[in-house]
Length: 601
Image (cartoon, rainbow, N blue to C red; front, side, top):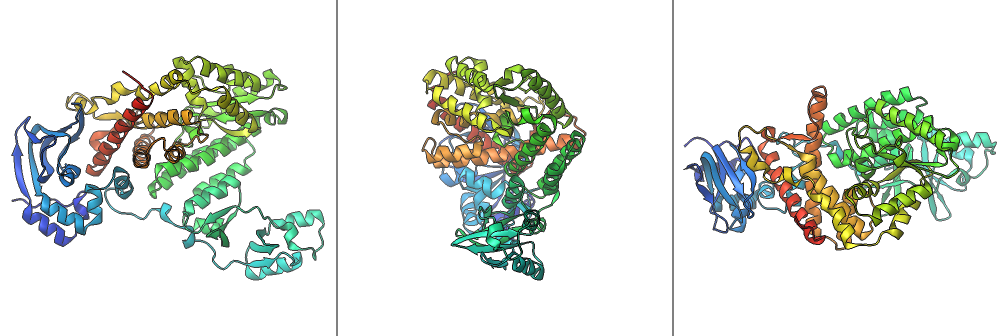
């Protein structure tokens, strides 16, 4: 018999003794067209690996849920559990390896990674395997911990020490900051304080605690360096205080972070802070995409990249609005972003989704003029106009505070399709510039006027099936060789999860806008059980990874191609297997939403 190929997942995880044991026990079987290999609810005695041909997996509802090509493996979970609830039928004459159950169980016992592939929860399987790049391990920059990078021998000062003494200590220790103890509190004194000291004309013998910041921005010693970097950018600071069990033990400086992460994204944030013109912002905006490519190539996953880009995009939008808007407009307006940007789930630039809330005293003509300039500016920055015209240059999305409240109320009182879409867009809103309290006031108003009307919530949640016609029967369509093997991963995978979680959050009156934070809160409230929450979160993360890879490929090819289109035929064995699991989670979650909100077809 020909030698078994161990070059692909999960068999590339096996040790040499495990490979020898498998090679001795494996056999080859041939199956004709339409022959059933595994029947529902019947004992399974082998793990199957396709050598040639094509096998389809049919769910309990009769829909084809996956296809198995050469090198694909099935049905690991059913093998361990004893039975499968699905049917596996040969679509094209198939030659397959058959690996006895006893051998598989023995390898699982000795090889945790192989076991993760075969028999863990969906969430654990994603967490264990989805970070694999080209089906091999690599060390992600995202795995660097604060404890590996921080300065564990900080300089300490007493609050009663003089400014003169502090200056001498900083010079002697060649550092830019020191931790200060004063009256039971701990603060940080930095060299930048000397600028304020000189301006104020403070005497050199004044106590250092008067110039110390006690409102610390900190990072836990076991947190990721990447998160510390985000914190520095969000608060526009050069360092964070490192804590262990809530006690400050050192500092993590920007220069320390740069030793672990590419400084590209931080340099972008610094340039944004210094920018004075729109032309500068246009140049910086291009660098933001370069940051995404760089960090993605270093293994940072899509959800973390989305969090980073929310920080950078918010800074970009705020700076553009500050440059364009006169002070009297900036201070009396609230610029908000919505959709994926509001949720903190946008990575690459997509359509504009924004609005403007105005104080009643603002000149509407001035607001209209500057709003038009802002929309044009975002187009220059690489954000295309919204096809639905959900932008600040549209009077519908540029209103005074009372008018905005009235509009939001009207959505709740008339559950039309358009109103539910507008409500869905708005509840993801995040303020990025101006008087942010106005958005908070509108959202507070929404909570007051919104009653948990069963009919309205059902109408709102119904959009979870908006793209059902595309997802249902997708794998059956692939059996028609005239069909391109591509799926819209956003419509088939990401949107149903995002909107289903959004609907549950609206009903539960959850304030968070990020989908992952909403999932966490819904689990805490027992709206969804913990296992489903983990599965949905991990499936969404993986789908976001696949979508990002597909869209980066389009950019690499000069922008030619349709966004969000995943080429199923180009996926690796492991990627197809994880995608199948992810889509099954999405399908299961959609059924939960349909049942919860009493949605009928």
